[in-house]
Length: 345
Image (cartoon, rainbow, N blue to C red; front, top):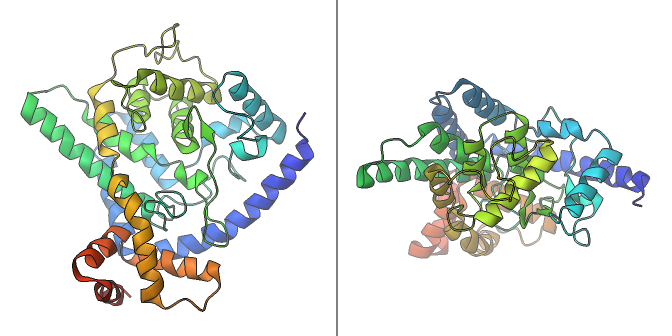
């Protein structure tokens, strides 16, 4: 049996390190005009939601993206039981995910450990992996979803798309990165567990959707971000099964799955829209290392400790998004990177 005392000590140490990094990221993000504009766009779209419960939940999660379903796991013993339940169901590999690594640090399940504005959009060194990156990534995906909705309506004459789902799914999908991708003091991010074959932030937001009593169509639409449900129903069903286990709900009774484990209904078109819109990373992921190399030269930080070099690069990308820096570098060379950084003090 896992030593609960050791679990508690590990969680306390991780929490302290994350709190220091989160505070620094918050300060950086609040100076980013790009991140603040992205968040303002997201909030303006959330304000247009019609269904009252959905609108309230989305606005609440933007203001405070807390995993309230974690109220079900108030202590180390409860979290160990959740780990065991997922392992028994074949939804995690206990050889790769220890009880200490399943849930990120969370001093208070009613309060997010960092704001939506401060969080990164991807893992260390990956896409949008800087303070404000989550807001920028989400805003881009949301606009893509809106454009896809318009295209489906005009091109195919589809009149009964649920505009609320088109808006809410991309806003919610990555919101648990505020919990999973907290900042360490050295500017790196916490590692995510893999649950049901995908990154834990994806399962955790589905658990939160279910815990808050939101609709099955919304849950399936959010679940579609990481796999297209019309092409890979089994994988999406696994996401929902893991989320239902964590939320303590019966996926059959909630209208998510049939008793044979398949989706209860044909997937909504809005789930495909959410999947297609979640592809900002296709460009942002592979270009990030190119940008980081260019920033190392442009910022002249070679004499600084590694952690401070990392924070300087994070601050630069918060001032000018990584993709803007890449576009300038690609077309006009390293001098354009320095010029862009000077123009956004």
